[in-house]
Image (cartoon, rainbow, N blue to C red):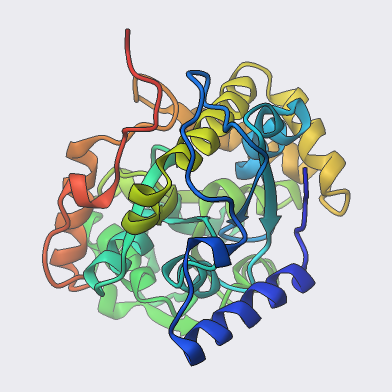
Amino acid sequence: MTLASSRPALLALLCLLAAFALTACGGADERGTSPPATPTATGALPTKTTATLVLDFVPNAVHAGIYRAVAAGYYEDNNLDLEIVEPTSTADTLKLIDAGKADFGIADGIDIAGQIDDGADAQGILALVQRPLGGLIALKSSNITDPRQLEGRKVGVTGVPSDTAVLETIMQDAGADPSKADVVTIGFNGVLNLESGKVDAFTGYWPADGVQVEVDGKPATIFALDEYGGPSYPGLVVFSTTERIKADAPLMQAFVDATVRGYTDTIADPGRSLDDLLAENPALKRDIAEAQLDAYGPLFQGEAGAFGGFSAQDVEALSAFLVGNELIGRPVTPARFATSEFLPQDE
């Protein structure tokens, strides 16, 4: 098993991406993975196969099931040598998968829909969480108990277009006028800006950023998107391309099988998966990672019948939300957004 949450590994991938752009050539064998082969009934590939997974961000609690699958040998059981790479940005993940220079990526459901709308060949194969992670985060000490109180207050956003939709949806649902908020672009430094008093609230991932604020000893107030007028949808999705999915379904099956086992373990015994995550990522702080895993735990399966599935209704709600906020030009159908063919089927 090869683990690489490192910049050098990403730089190597980016070099491949640059070469791809210059030569406009390359096939499946040039990706570093073995040619397609028929797996056994358990999902195992017949020969050792190398594949690359590009995370959505630095390794953290939401990835605990992946590191559990590594530690338990589930990828190895399926003859899959998985390299895990930390991106410098979400854009890197999307570009590498679209160019065929990595096999799997993780991104927000909004990003997947946006890729499809832009004409990219993205498609989800596994939902890591069943709820959107975005929301507004404020300190209790600011006495902000209702989104209406954000009128006239300073609210930080990353600069990603979907942040504006999150802010406007939450405030409008509460009966507030979003145009009356003092919106400032702060990049991805929301926690620091909030705790230092530079903003009164910010858009962020509440199970990660909101929990970090709490662990830092500053009680937080969370306004989650799907609790304030937004849709419920898979907040993080493992995806590939339809071309890659069709060309190497056995690889997809081997990856999904092992990853589902890892998250099933995590749901049953989060403490063990936390240990696995920290063993491979010793720079993480245990208290923050543990609190974040507690927050993510109920989201892994949510109201889905089993871990990893996609709800057509949720995808349609996400699509309508994005069209309504002019983030995509036309609806994305559930079948185009994701495939469930590699997930365990009910008996």
